[in-house]
Length: 324
Image (cartoon, rainbow, N blue to C red; front, side, top):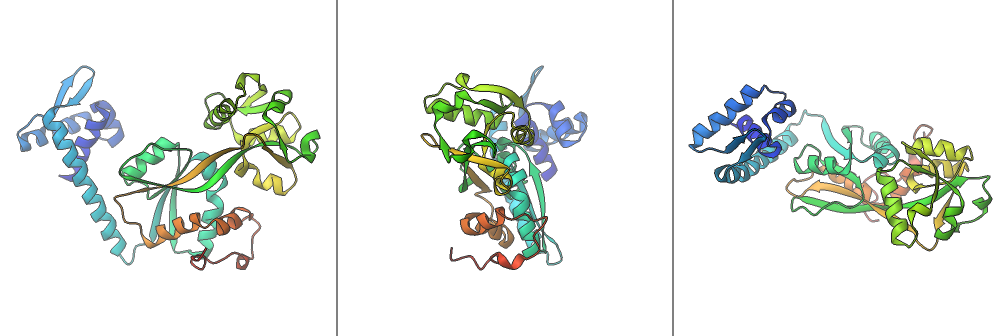
């Protein structure tokens, strides 16, 4: 019956049997048969079928609410049963957006592998909407995302870090002796930016516009599809850029880049933890969220290079930092 419910839920949400068959890796006749069996069992028609797809009938809408509730209860039961399986290796499913996945998560996972080697992680890197949906559907235990998320009753959102967008330039740049610049100075320098439509570009342009500078005034001389490519171009002296301070932490420490604050208009975006409000966190999941909330320990972890780190004793053992 659970399989029938999963099929019904997928069709109700996609409103398309062809798309549902692809998502579920099932044949269309098999999906149609399972829907028909459900309708026969409950003595009601759940879908109106048209050339454009299928839509829920009034009976279908009632049934959909109950199916979601039942599948949620079954998922919770599965979680609790799995947690009791003593011989099962502990596993946490994580989701992260690109900046977090590339520049924060590797250090955190390296630290956890050293301090708690009995825990395994499966990580999905995706956009905020995809991570949020997976947390709601309990496919991911913990999601780490950049920027705001819409309110949802089944979603817990906790901020754990503030990421600042900073002006980045090479150490040999004339501005390198300074600590900050004003917005009005930006149009006079060649700017290397992410492509139009990227999240980083949108955040930068919205922030600049809100603070009184038309983004069209910026002298964008190059647009690139990745932060790494931008960093290489800036290091070569071909312009400056405005990107996340997290993405240039190592180069800043190595004195490859200088970062300047925008003094009259600092731009911050929150980094947040997403969890399902209907799920109970395991001990290992709580350990990870406690780490993320410990600013002192997290800052220490992010400042380390785990390719070279051998002396773990300098870091505070996880669990000993509960008083922070």
